[in-house]
Length: 271
Image (cartoon, rainbow, N blue to C red; front, side):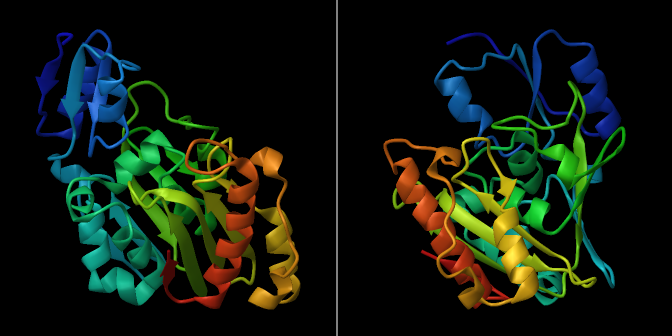
């Protein structure tokens, strides 16, 4: 086992200072992306800086047109929030579908979003709900944030503090889970915003991570119904292929999950 020094800062400023003054540091939140990479020796930080207990990273705020969630807020807390259920039921349902009970009580929205894990659920909601990501340095629009597999606009040492979602007119989420891990093999978050524009975000399937399916958006703009998507397919070359599902099967799942997201507007559909 390689040597790692574990740090547990109490404030955001302390966490940033530790990162700045350490050699080969890494932030740790829920750990569901980082810890597997440590186990497989794909990452070997000399300093782990645990940000899960920093008060500035907690909390839920719901206004007339926004849902704001602190980055250290756990999936189980988001799923159980009555305020979020009332404002964006699909977001609450998404959180409740992540992994299992143990994962939901350990994993955080910030860890999921900061790592841009291709199997993560939250990136689809962030992109579809046209969110703004607030860090300790700046604000980043969702459109500029995700930059490929495990890659975001976050700079070294930058901490995601909170995620600010726009409250849509209505939204739906549909997900096909890996039967073993229960993580997404293909999922679609569909939102119609109050100004009428529609955003469809796909996670779990794309070979570049989360992405907007613009062809589906165009059809739904004309006719906001599942029937409008009948016959629409996506190029399998855009899909991941692995031991769990080949690219052509994931392409099929993307189309099915998007139709089911529209059929279940105001909630979630989980397989």
